[in-house]
Image (cartoon, rainbow, N blue to C red; front, side, top):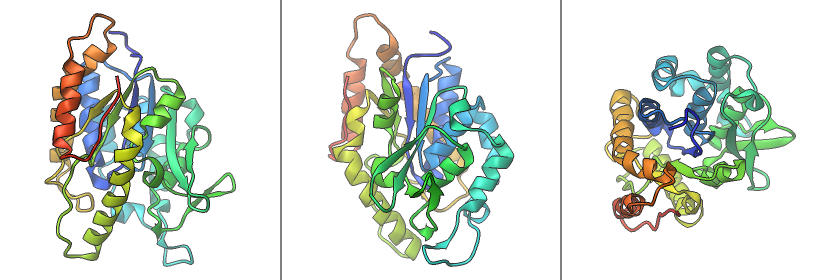
Amino acid sequence: MDARSEFGLALGGGFLRGFAHLGVMDVLEEAGLRPGWIAGTSVGSIAAAFAAFGHSADETAEALEELGWGSVTKGRPRKLGLSTNQGLEELLLRLLGDVRLEDALIPLAVVATDINSGNRILLDRGPVARAVRASCCVPGLYVPVEIGGRLLVDGALTENVPAGAVREMGAPFVVAVSLGCGLPYPDVQSWTQVMANAWDIATHSQMRFEILAEADLLIDPDLERFSAFRDGRREEVIQAGRERTLEALPALKELLTPEEPDNVILRWMQAVKERSRGSGIGGRR
């Protein structure tokens, strides 16, 4: 298969479950499958940025060892948020440099949300660190990030899995990675769990009815046992991404092979629907 395959990769949001993206990327690298386009939302934008600038999954995991709520959050309560996520921008500047979206080795886009209009904003030009910070800006918790005269917050509000964005970039086939497909909502026992459930309910609803209709293939790592907010199990989360992607490889190879299909994709997507527990998530061929 060509070093640069004709598929685009959409990496979804999910807070600390986002380390599963590194497992996905690791398997794709081992299989010689390099996306021709890549877009990310929220934590997916972090993984997308590193991949688009040529970093392997192992290199990215090592670089992001210090990534966490403590390293990201800075500042005191303000009018538009309890703090800022300026620490994320500073971390990315140090790790990636002052690079721009339009200079990526793989065409790169980041999804954010305009908090004043409610519109999805697709960022494909400008500083990477600031765009990713905007895409990861949890509204209420963090002060919105100003870019181009807009106040931007987390892209998960409008396109949690940016399959549509990848399609708009020109990809003929779209592979989407969802970090929340079919996950149950745990009984809440703290304010962080209330916040996590509320966020998941909102983003899963729009995933069901809009976003994944653009995906030709969905990879849905089994992340039910992992918290989106509590750290400490990164290697297990990465492994969950690896395992599901290994299962999906035959379907992905069929998608990219011009020969007559053997219905592998159809069977895979049916299995995804069953795992999503009736959530209505599907894909298209």
